[in-house]
Image: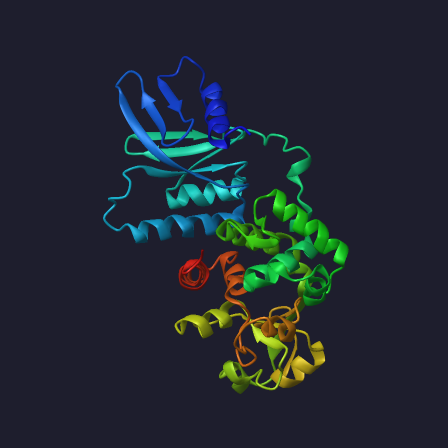
Length: 349
C-alpha cells in the first residue's frame, strides 16, 4: 500500500512544479521542505490521520498538545508536527491555520509553516477513495457497537448474540462490523481470542462518526426548567432514574469537578414524560436541557465490569468527550482535552 505521506508530498510537488525553488521530500520521517537557492531546510514530523473535518480536527489538536505536554523541553524532537490527511475540509483547514498547525492532504491542499516558511495551497478537489471509502462499521448501528467495545474492552470476545443485545442491533450487523474492524486493523484474532488494537485511532474515528452520523438521530429535543430553583443543584435531579445519566457538560463537571455547565445534556432509556416530570421541565427549543436516547443498556454493560457502576451518575467518559469535542465553546474543548488525557489515553495498552 502506498504511503499516504509520500502520496501527498508527490501531489504537492507536482502542484508547485519544477520551476519553484522549494523541494519537498518525504518517503518516511521526517518530511523535509527545503529552499534549493538558500539551502534552508524545514523538517516536519508527519502525523498520519484520516479525513479531517471541523468536528474531528479538534481531537487532532488535542493529541498534538498532549505530545507537547509530555515533552515540555522539546528535547524529544525539533521537528514541527505536520498532519497528513486523506482530505482536509475548508472548515478544518481554517481551524488548523488559526491554531498554527501545519497540514497536508492527498489532494495537495496545505498550510505548512515553520520559521520563515509559509506554504499555502487550497481549492484542490478530494481524490476518489474507491469502495473502501465507505466503511459500514461506522454507520449508525456500527457506532453503537464500537462504543461498548471501547467502554468495556473485554466485550470483544463476547458472542455476537450477546453484543447485539447490548445495543439493540441485529447479529448480522455485529458480523459485518467485526469484519470491518478486523480489516481495518482494530481487531486482531490470536489463539482463538479477539484483541482490540489501535484504540486511540478507533476512539478518534468513533467520536467523529458519532457526531456526524448518530447523535442527531438520538435527540429528543431541548427543554427548560419550569422552576428557577430546579436550575440549580442539577446533580441530584436524576437520583430516582436508574437508566438516565448525565453527558456532555454536566458529565464533564462530574468527572473533573471544575466545569460549570450551561447546557445540561442527559441520556435516558426512560420515557421523555417521566424525565420531564422528575426534572420539572417542559419542551423549549431554546431550553438549557438536552435529552437524548441512551442507545446502550447500562445495566447489561455494567454487569461486564468487575465492580458495580450503577451509582455513577454520568455516561462513560468517551461519550462525554465526544459531546464536548464537537462544541464551539473553547471551555468545552479544554475540558475534552482533560478527559482525553486523564480518562481515555492514560493506562491504555
